[in-house]
Image 1 (cartoon, helix red, strand yellow):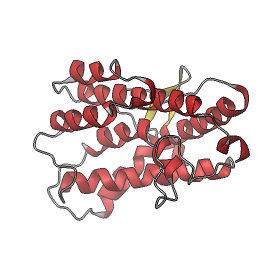
Image 2 (cartoon, rainbow, N blue to C red):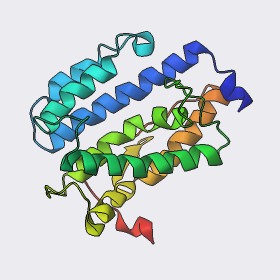
Image 3 (cartoon, helix red, strand yellow):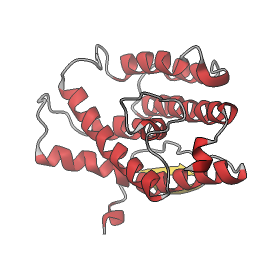
Length: 210
């Protein structure tokens, strides 16, 4: 926690740039895997990120991405799509929080998120590259009902067992979260490389639940 609290602004900006660049690339990969338009436009946003993302390119990219992902979607409104996404994000967020806490991080001290009302600022920083996995997995659900069924919640839980690539190795999202958090510690203590997940075609590794 002491090392985390003493992390310089320069290092925090380096981390944030890497995080949102990964997030945007993964969003573009979702569109590509779903055979939707807008892939190159979303990728182009990753090349517009400057020091600390003062221009808020991440938010601009997210706005355009969701227009391609689900035309007409308003992330602020109640809908079946938002219900699925929000539930899936909460599952991954909980897994990220658990890993960060187990590694000794102070969850309220974020890299980019700094709200005094949020006890999980660091969690909300670290979940960003993993949101795209929820986006991809949730397309397995086609219901128009806002209230999720037990089976639909089970499908969203399987986001943790989706296959991804990190450090040039294939593993599950759940394992990738642990690898990412461990690399964050290495970055803080030893200036090691931050390891982040890459999207691959949807594949649920069910054996990971056993």
